[in-house]
Length: 143
Length: 143
DNA sequence: CTCAGTTTGAAATTGAGTTTCAAAACTATG
DNA sequence: CATAGTTTTGAAACTCAATTTCAAACTGAG
Ligand SMILES: [Mn+2]
Ligand SMILES: [Mn+2]
Ligand SMILES: [Zn+2]
Ligand SMILES: [Zn+2]
Image (cartoon, rainbow over all chains, first blue to last red; front, side, top):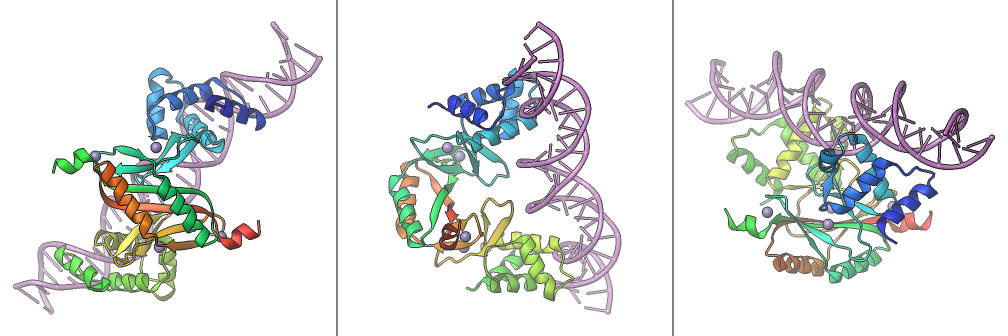
């Protein structure tokens, strides 16, 4: 089931309404490059939809996270970021602390060792966060 | 070189002064259990040193992080936490989202794969963050 | 000790995130 | 379509950790 359907079904089951704003925000969120903060997505939306308020963007992104079509990210820059949730391909991130570039990586062997570590402590994992901070190729070359 | 010396040398090289407050905060920080937030360490300090202000605790913890004797942690509860930096034994964390318990783990094979991933993208890693969120043994039993 | 520069602590400010509330928008029913 | 009962919206207010401000206190080189 695609993300639009998941969201609409979530709205229905929660007794929430399908509104023009929610649909526009959903479309824009899914089409846009990933890792947007609320403020960034709000600014992007303002170009075509200047009537949509910041609070609505914020509330809608929270709804996306609640129904599982978005993931909240935090790269330590003081802003929560969101990305569409790809159930098929979980990934983690390399974050360039100079230019802000974000590279996604997939490493099943790390995912596996994670589960092994959790077992070692009889810990039930709901989610995890794995980020490497440093310099991307470009940024490690110049100075 | 022990952490007290590292801090004092950092103060000297930066033209900063060694003060009563900074020494008390350093001692308390190193003696205390780890993963304290600024507020928590401030409350702990207040028992024996009610004159030390929150701003000073905050500024001093930032100094610890700057000179490398402390690491800033963020477990997504809206408070920055600090722990002494153990150069010898790097570890990552399991965080119980129910009771707040923090378990430290060491897994060299993950550290190694991390370096491999970074190389794959010609990325120079300065630091990383790896946390597993879920339920500790106790908390997964009583639900 | 003296004094310029630094630090301190209380209070003010910042900024992302969240909540409030009256007006607008939905949707189920008649 | 009209109406009524909810829910949603957007601007503004609020929250709270983090940070800054500033006058008074402290530090340490001379
Ligand atoms: Mn991503
Ligand atoms: Mn730790
Ligand atoms: Zn870069
Ligand atoms: Zn627990």
